[in-house]
Length: 143
Image (cartoon, rainbow, N blue to C red; front, side, top):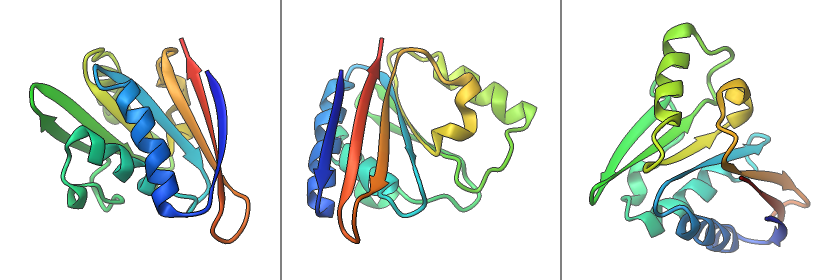
């Protein structure tokens, strides 16, 4: 699946994110790519709403790269690597372990910082500026 959308508001971005979240409700990896401020965290918040995660618990990172949420009987991992320039061995091991969890939902912001350990089966979301308030969102599903 390869799709591209143009959004002109946060609400439109969230709506696209919610449709992606519905596709991975039984588990999967969503990788977000894009420059600073393009809307990766907003996209994640849109997914979180559909998945049943409290809005306020989706934050940009300070010192925590991985946030774990439990919804019903499923784990959701929100990984945000913005502040990370290089993955050390310990974090790489933890990320590898998380990526093996087929029934869990894993959302990775700044996924380009861990490309070498991303699973082959995933959904890539590339967000880019098209104007002051508009964005292009490209969705690529890898099987």
